[in-house]
Amino acid sequence: MNNTSEKPIILGIESSCDDTSVSVLKGNIVLSNVTAGQKVHQLYGGVVPELASRAHQSNIVPVVSAALMEANLEPKDINYVAVTKGPGLLGSLLVGTSFAKSYAHALNIPLLGINHMEGHVIAHFISRNPDFKAPDEPFLCLTVSGGHTQIIIVKSALEMELLASTIDDAAGEALDKAAKVLGLPYPGGPVIDKLAKTGNDSAFKFPMPKADGDNYSFSGLKTSFLYQVRDLKNAGNDLDEKLIADLCASYQKAVVDYLLLKFKNVLKRTNAKGIAIAGGVSANSLLRQAFTNLAKEQNLKLLLPEFEFCTDNGAMIGGVAYYKIGEGAFDGLDLVPSARLKL
Ligand code: KG4
Ligand code: ZN
Image (tube, rainbow, N blue to C red; front, side, top):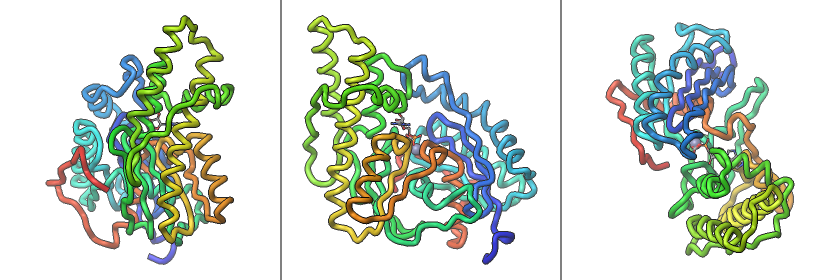
């Protein structure tokens, strides 16, 4: 395939957590990307797996139709169906994979089961811009989401290796749980990001976690936040707007400083020519600024994902499929999702 007109049309389906997202791509160029979020979880302050599966069931058909309509295409135009096969919530993954299997079978076209974590990295290899050029130098990627924190060396779209990860909570989870302690809505990451802008980031000190080696650990940081809020309340403080903003700014800074600290140690030992962030937390303004500064300081290429490809999306799943088509590794109707799939 050497010119755009010959590039395959791919339907990418993502349903691993609480977003039903479907995209149509022409090669690595995104024609549409439609996401239905699930507000039902806000009542509970976190994702309720059974409610997520049910919402995916009601959302999937309309979201596929909307993605096709936005791309101005019909089912008969699709050449490949790609779907997240894991990691994620099993019930949610089952909705996506069952739908994708029947869709591919009905259209008699190949099916590809895709690793969600590869998808987050591939956010850097897709674009809405038809003139987009994918990165061709090795880069070190920090993937930070609600379920994962990983440092990955990316040699190409098809060659990536996990170098470090978290031994307990993920960075996004650490932010979401802190927001819950403050009574803020779910998901808390973007709310903390917004409130932190008006707060003082040195109002409170949170200790840097002490996990050995390159791996992360967020459980201690999360607990110290919980104790800080408890102590403030016990001392008779009102959690007013100013105090909440200061807590958000100080905690967000601790999370970002810690992410950077470990990432820089790993970076020293690689031959990466660029640095990247991926996953939902890569939408965070402080983290984006910190990576922008680091790239400048070390004269490295900076890869920041488009906002629509930070949080879970169907485009990144279709994108992985595009790069894998050449390998011919297609799945059959016996494709089984896996909640704990490794990168
Ligand atoms: O990648 P993602 O959509 O889903 C998973 O695969 O987990 O990531 C969701 C996570 C949540 O923890 C959410 O709070 C966080 O991404 N997030 C943010 C921001 N936007 C989303 N965290 C910090 N700042 C943001 N702006
Ligand atoms: Zn994700």
